[in-house]
Amino acid sequence: MGITEQILADHTTRKDHDGVTWFTAADLARLGIHDQLFTVMQTVQHTLRMRRARQVVESHGCTDRWSLEDAH
Image (cartoon, rainbow, N blue to C red):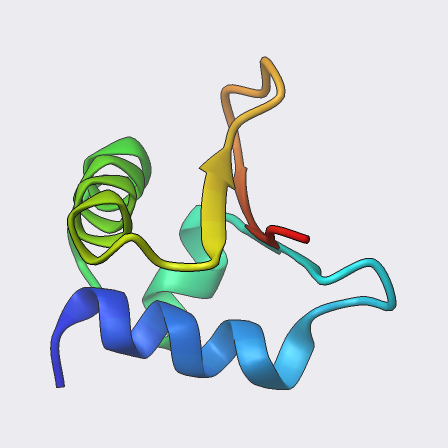
């Protein structure tokens, strides 16, 4: 399973009532992803844009986490 698929699967199980899941370095480690936090963010963001997915990646100015959000 690729990084984006792992992130999407985790998002599905952890998202809040607004459809938002925050990811930190600890979350990536829990998923067995050993790349840097923002490297993973960029990979996921690029893949989702290429797929024209219904999720978007946001950092909201944070440097220690980023979020995956269901676009409505």
